[in-house]
Image 1 (cartoon, one colour):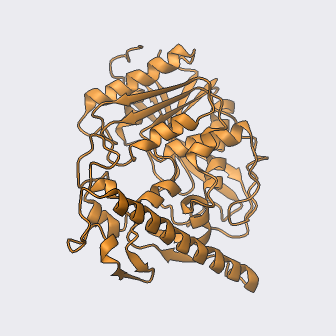
Image 2 (tube, helix red, strand yellow):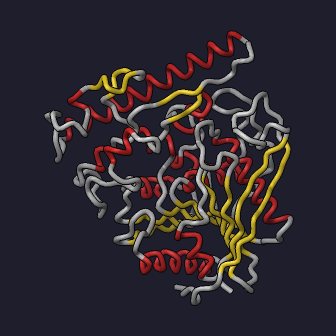
Image 3 (spheres, rainbow, N blue to C red):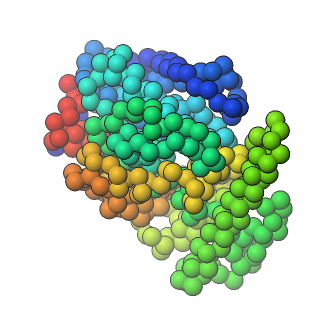
Length: 396
C-alpha cells in the first residue's frame, strides 16, 4: 500500500465556472440561472509546489466540502483536489439532481480543458457517493432528457466526460432512500405535526413498542414510512398537474415536510448493527433533528421532491446507477458510521457493474472521522494505494 507523504502546505484557489442555460423560470436565489447562465464556485486545493496530472473531485449535491477533514487530508498527503459546489450550495429546497449533473460536468470539462488534468477520480463521500455513480452512469451511457417532473433537461446531449475511477466513501444509496428509511411515519396530518400515531412515534415514551424492537413492529414501521412517502408524492404530483392545467405564471410551490429523522436504527443498535453510538446521529440528538430545521427534506418544492426525494421518481438511485458503471470502484464502509445505514455501502458494491471493484471496511471510523486522525490517515492511504495499483498516480 502506498504511504502518503508528510503533510504538505495547502494552496487554495477560488474557482468560478460559468455556462449558458435557458430555463422557463429560476429556482435558485441570486444570479445563478436568472441571467441565462449558471455560475458555480469551488475551491481547488493543491499541495504547495507539487504538480499532478490527476485530480480528485469532491462534490455533494448541496454542501461544500473544503472544510471537512477528508479532502484536506488528501491534499496534505500530496493530491490535487477540487471541492466543487453545485448551483444549490447550502440550500437544497429547490434542488434538481439532473441539473447537478450538468454542474459537475462543467467542472470536469474545465479541469480537462483549462487545467490539463489527464485523470479524474470522483471521490463520492457521504451524499456525494450516489451523485458520483449517478454522474458516471450518465457519462458512460447518457439517457436523461427530462426531469421527473417532465421539464426538459438535456443530460443526454451535455457531453458529460466520464471519470477514470470512483471512490464511494461513507456514502448512502440516495437521498430518496435515506429519507424513506428516516421519515417519521407517526405523522397523520401533513399540516399538523402534532397529530401523530403514538404507536409509531419512536420518541414518545408512551409508545408501547420500545427497543429492542420486534420484527413485527419494524415491518409495520417500514410499511407506514412507505405509505407516508407515497401520500406526499401523490399530493406533489396532483398539485403540479393542477398548476400546469391552470397555465398561469404560477409554476412551482414550496412546502414543509415535518418530522423527517426517525430511523429506528438510531435508537435501537440491534438493527443493522455496527459500531455507531446509540441514540445519536451525525447531526446530534435524533429526536431534536427529527423536528429541527436541518432535518432531511424539511423544506422542498414540488419539482425538487420528485427529483431528489421521491423513491418512485428520482433518477439518482445509487444501486440502479452503479449497475451501469464500468470504471474501477472502491467502496469504503466506516464501521461506526452514524449517518449512513450499515447495509448501504455493501448494497451499492454488490450492484455495481464494474468488473474491477473493491470493498473495504475501516473499523471504528465514524462518518466524519471526528477525533480519529489515525483512521482518516488509514482511509487516505487506502485510496492512494488502490489508485496506484490501477495506474492512476496521485502522489508526487
